[in-house]
Image (cartoon, rainbow over all chains, first blue to last red; front, side, top):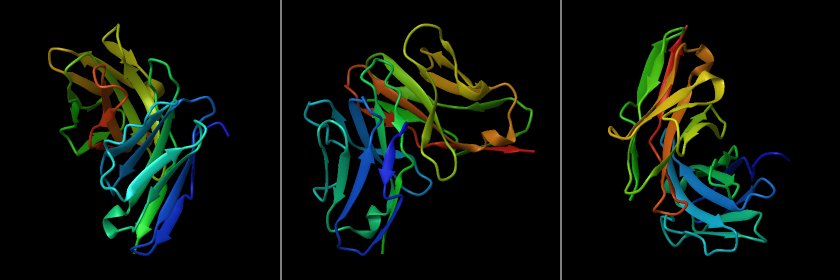
Length: 114
Length: 114
């Protein structure tokens, strides 16, 4: 596809379960970002990947959160032992490696932890 | 470290009137400034950016923004608002001294009343 694709679009899980969220960036984009958006709130930076460099994990809220990016393309955000406060929309964005740094966002995954 | 403030949670304007959505920022180096718009149940869409050059930047859907270095502001404007402009607007900044980490403001909800 032409845009950033995220799956699933909605995920309902029980407290304590692990979840995996997937992001397919735009082909050729070397930068990939994950953000969390709580209801009606702004975006909270989680993690950033750029090419083959070590990811910037400075935004991950706890060690229950992790992310990987395979082959410089698809990324998976994993939340272990989910808590109710993890309920939010998780947004992925990709960006070409040019100076303009425009980020192209997916529609997000809405996570609900019961 | 960089930061962004959007002092108004909500802006209401009548259709046809000019609109302004405010943004101020703090960075140590030169700022890269962006505006994004989020329509209900959709990801963020890029509107416009300032990197260098002319302080008045024109973007999508008739929006423009003026970079004011002395006031550290980057207010979003449109001469004549449309009902379809009603959405959540985010200002974002990247400090050239802090790699690729973007900081987003909390968002301003714009309501254009018919």
